Image (cartoon, rainbow, N blue to C red; front, side, top):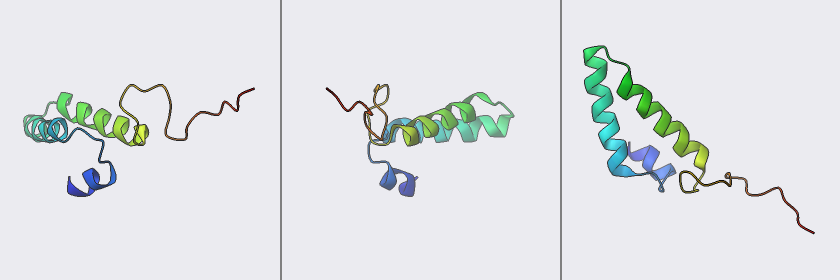
Length: 67
């Protein structure tokens, strides 16, 4: 977790830790829900590239050159 959070400081630490705990619990029980949520969180966080989740602009910025 430490390395991931160092590379992605905008990530919600509390949510990540809760998802990791839930994923461990669900994995032991043979349930796929929490590990999938964790995967989505990690994917969304890495794709955000420093942008707030839900932002329309990607990490590479806008391609719009303007007028």
